[in-house]
Length: 127
Image 1 (cartoon, rainbow, N blue to C red):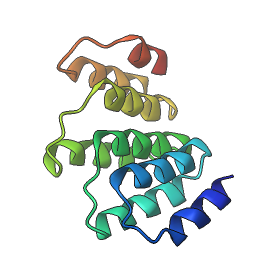
Image 2: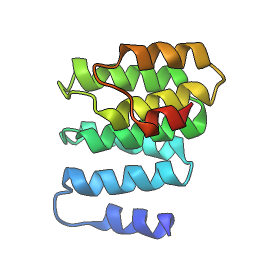
Image 3: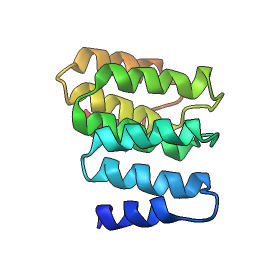
């Protein structure tokens, strides 16, 4: 269904809103296609669409499924520095997930310790 979804997305006549981009990026992330998710994310930004906090959850999830730890860290930092979005529990959970998938448990614990709020079960579950 992702191929058909992309065809419809590409053929859209109206301006694509952030929700539409999020749906496609999230779909690619869910299906483990990090390359397409990240390429679409770049296209989204090139088209002048400002990413939302949901966009970054999908981008981080795409990185997790592809083992892209450095890319995930870079995207996580851009949430704050470039887009001035306050990271939410979902962002931290996704970052911990991507780090743990590479066996970097001490680094994941450092991320958890740096959180400005108490971690919830999704963060602990990512370990």
